[in-house]
Image (tube, rainbow, N blue to C red; front, side, top):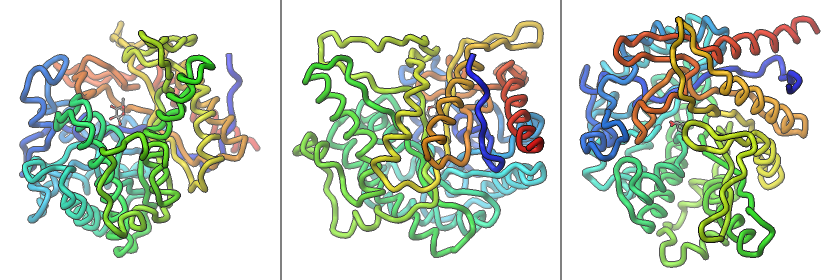
Length: 444
Ligand code: FCB
């Protein structure tokens, strides 16, 4: 058993969710449709043929959910705003009823002293903008900046942070590269152009939000991994280097260095993105924080069939290798390569086939997972990486994208027939862990 790590007294302890995955109320109070509403209409897109129409009904049960976060003694909550709820077409008129919902949610959080961390875009583009070309259209980046400015104007003084995008790698590669996610396009060239427009939109949104001069910290959330070569062969090593360049450096390079990584650009060849003069300067702007989502490492094998990851510590219900030391390695690598701002671990967690048994949900595997990842995080911090907080994914079991409701990531179990919430053992463990961390400082 790992010894308990020590985190700073002002470290933020939280949980994360996203709008489409929990809110439901897909057609209520003037909300417009998003690309995920549309994507779910094709049954083959989602494993259990489900959709987000009701999800966890958080739109109506947000008070109960905030109460749960408070009961766990957590001080931070990361959520996303559904763009089409506050601007149904993605341009033009604002929907006051939509903004009212987020105002109520923020009120409820503040009442309980829970710091709200808002993400502007967690994959649910207003359908109206998709019809106009979606993220392949450069204009969408400008529409995003308008939306960001309006949100900063309304909420920038009430939330602790605003992240522009959640995991643009996924928006680009799963949405446009392999069609696993909405809008369901499979075209390598489009995916790369989309990634550029996402980065551009991030930069434009920062500029637009900074004009508002609200106190919220501004940043972006990237999913990241280290890429390990399966063997020492030149082919495996090259593959790992390229994987890292195309995923991590592809987003980190423009933001922190003002250019795309050479290796990846060369590999993309004719698919390299069209970049207008001045774009890179817009993207390469100071951010107040970097959100890192960490789930697994990339294991790179050029053999046919590829060598599978050893998974010495097992795999999750998603089939993802459990590899906590990858979090230490990733953070140290980023720290060495870039001049980083403060970091938040904005997502980390695991899917587990949890079941309610006599009003309890035993999920020992998740407890181990979180404990090991926190130990790995503490290790990176001991080596000088400035990490300010940790958000467990996720508060609730929820709509896990193309897996529908078949994968459970929550520390709180949701019965989708009754909407009953049941704290899993991991929720109680996390509560105690955080309590213990705070006690260390009180005692000191
Ligand atoms: C991340 C997403 C989040 C959730 C977790 C499991 O990639 O940001 O919405 O699906 O994975």
